[in-house]
Length: 174
Ligand SMILES: *[C@@H]1O[C@H](CO)[C@@H](O)[C@H](O)[C@H]1NC(C)=O
Image 1 (cartoon, rainbow, N blue to C red):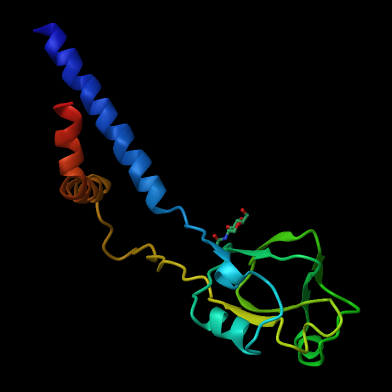
Image 2 (cartoon, rainbow, N blue to C red):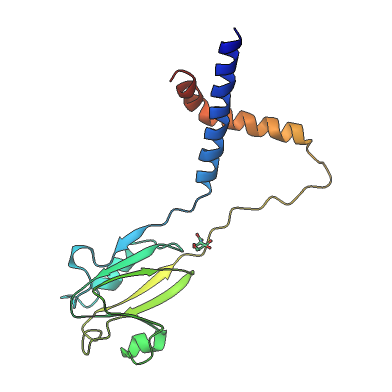
């Protein structure tokens, strides 16, 4: 008798931990790694618009990473003006190791060009727009009608049970 109570209380602990883990993972922002240019990589394209076409087909979020695969070339991040003029003298970022991973660490526009003479002019350049961070609405603390903590906890527990009930069942009958 005592044993079975102990087991079910252990199962309950597992369940609580499971909920905590799943809940916290829901708040983790997923980061995506994208291969620039797909299989072709970062190389002077046939079609001058290729890289901007590629970029416009993707949605970039903060902390996504771009992977540039190339040979005998380079990846630079420059200003808009330098991008337009294919100027590579004062890059914000420079890499020529052949396998560059660049983290899109802020929302807004990033201007990539090749630093190899003539390549940017022939279309080895790309503008990437990173979407603004969508912050979840922060519910302002409501002073006028405070919800009793127990009621809030009950609501949260009910929601958790609805979502995670299949898991609970799984844990108990494991
Ligand atoms: C991006 O990564 C940095 C460093 O890991 C982190 O501090 C920041 O919160 C992340 N931003 C987003 C929107 O995920």
